[in-house]
Length: 192
Image (cartoon, rainbow, N blue to C red; front, side):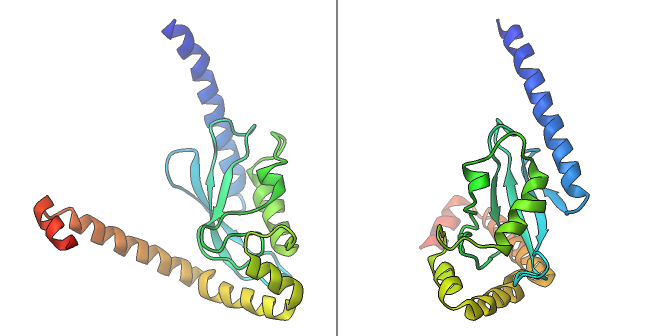
């Protein structure tokens, strides 16, 4: 029984690995991809579309492929801040129907980075916002909205800002690892 189960399960894993590698190679042709935790979690460097307030910006977008990908949509989120009505400013979560609700196996990761995300940044949907402040500003004060986006791009979405973020993460992980050099009693004393 176990052998039979393993025979059924193993091809599925191989197909998923093949699909993941194939999609990763297609994306790598135009975007920098960094693997995070195994084959199903990685980060894609995404550039703001030309002719938009996001032009010149560079974001890291975390991608998690679910077990049933491509039949189930990937989870994506911006790792550095972006000011947009349909992107949560704190978590980076993206509100996009085609990813969250209308996904089909006909779509792949290149659709996300070549079509869906550029379209989202070019044409925000303030009627269904995750960031209410950005939606209100987009609707009622469009020039202020463009200025705020430009401010966020300059502050959070440049190559320098990404390097600074990576350095901060490295510093915090160094301090976390240095805490493990202490005994439990010493660490408890420090918490007080």
